[in-house]
Amino acid sequence: MAGGIEAARRKELLQQISRGSAAAFDQFYHIYVNIIYGYLKTRIADEHFIKDVMQEAFVAIWKNAGTYRHENSVNAWVISIARYKLMDAFRAKYKLPQEEWDEDVLHVYEQEDISTQVIDKMHVDDAVNRLPSAARELLYMVFQAGLSYKEIAVLLAIPEGTVKSRMYTLKKQLVPLLEDRR
Amino acid sequence: MNVLTEDCQEIQMILPWVLNGSLEAKVKVKVFSHLSHCSGCRKEFSSWIALHQSMEAVQGEEEMDMEDTQALLCTIQKQTAPQFETILCKNTPDEALQHVVKGALWKVKHGTEESCQDVVTMLKLGKRSLQLVGKLICI
Image (cartoon, rainbow over all chains, first blue to last red; front, side):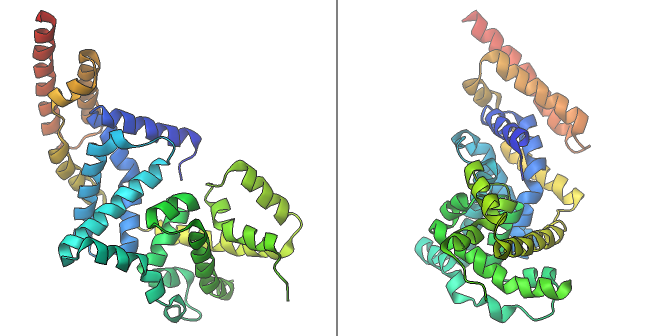
């Protein structure tokens, strides 16, 4: 998570990138390469596919740095680009029409029952890894990318209350495992 | 069995965001004030802390290999090589020149063998920039 000074530095780097600074882009790349990689790993396992999406995402960051709005966090902006590029890549790969894919993504929670995928007495890291990818994505957005529930609601195109209740439900599945581990 | 009050429900729903540091200060104060007198929510908060720590341990392992990281950067740089004319559109000639020179210096300091070629390209851009600035001054 980026604190005040670090967050300001990232915003400054984006400004420099928007003016064409390759040095600023290199620094930005090294800050975000593993954040984007970790995020994409929550949704896909194929390393080649991940790298293709990362390439697209960073090129988009370079081209669109000037469109970043300061009221949003840089993390949310970067994750939104990575997510958009991931959906684009899936659409291209499976030749899905836009509406069909969005529908699929938005309803993934309703299709998958988390409880059936979590096995008793499993270590929590195994449990997290076995969660549906959309659930891991949400956990990643909260704990790794440090996004607010408002930012996540915008990214996933769902109400803020739904973001909160999904996290709450997720934890209810994982807590027994944590207690077993103690 | 503990009965959750409306306050408890509201607080418990936002506990993950207390941990990730994204809550507004006034909301955070409200949460901690509630936690100070509610043992049920404190217990809930403890389990969130445990989950948060486990998540950090899991996700900490998700890092790209150093070689792959550098190779990907080189590929991206080929697509994003700055055109001085573009930089010049967005900056004054002085600033544009500074960007190009700073970029080259940064590459020399941090770059790999592969990126030496980029330095050469950047310096060529610098030379081209001087010519362009010269032309602008003549105009």
